[in-house]
Amino acid sequence: MILQPGETILWQGRPEARAPLDVSRPGEMLFGLGFIAFSMLWMDRAMDSGPIWLVGFVPLGLGLRLAVWRAWGPRLRAKLAHYTLTNRRAIVDLRWPLIGPRLRDLHIGPATIIDIDGEDPATIRLTNTGLVGQTGARPLTLCFERIAAPRSVLALMRDVQKGAA
Image (tube, one colour):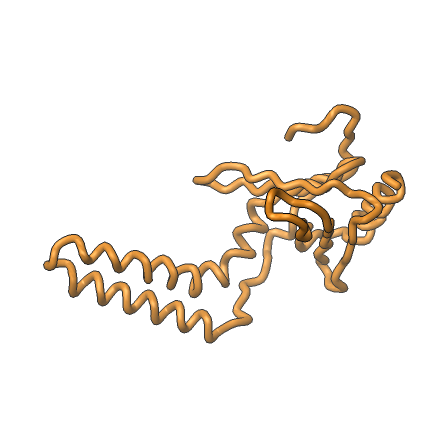
């Protein structure tokens, strides 16, 4: 990880490894299974008609996203995420196997909204409202999901926020 000059690491951690499967939308998952079944049927029937069977990959991908990724995505993200809190920024590093590392950071300042849910393990959400990219003003949100010692990390974030004022 690349730190800026004068930046020090205050805390590093990872989410709880056993994130629950998200089965909160069973209708969406069943719809995804329907897409998977349709695409398999399409590809089977169109196999003799030339390359038109390749069109079946579109509903297959959509079905896999709806049926599988919805449930297993949080668990995979928990397995691949690394969190870092410095004296200036909060950093989330997702190390995807095929894509590579994806580093997101958020500068913690006086205007940063820091919110925690009441669960254990807890998720801490940081939101900065301001100019992001060329599209104009929209909030930039960063989450430390399912961390084991949320109160101490929240206290560190509040200290960083006070120091930035």
